[in-house]
Length: 130
Ligand code: SF4
Ligand code: SF4
Image: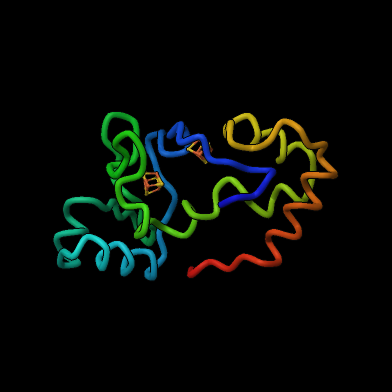
């Protein structure tokens, strides 16, 4: 993405933690297609299913697909594609400050209002296959 308000620094911070984003059925299908493995194998090796929530497994405090960057980039879940340009930023500055703190890729050059205007324009143009 070549937006002047966000450039991913590939720091991997958003891939770390003891849980991951949740996956939709489309996300699972995209992963299965990308990995070219049977659903059963993808589920056993890479997914964690708790009640109705599907997540990716974690290893050593990060997503199982993280290794010096995302190793399933074309097949990653839509929420990973969306991050950090989340619509909640539009609501108030506290969301903006919280997301900015956890993502060094967000520009430090824009005021909240400038950022919000650019994000609104961007969100109007982008669609995610959810
Ligand atoms: S935290 Fe932000 S800059 Fe770092 S990898 Fe994630 S999206 Fe990119
Ligand atoms: S799928 Fe890729 S981008 Fe998403 S959390 Fe895992 S390693 Fe990070």
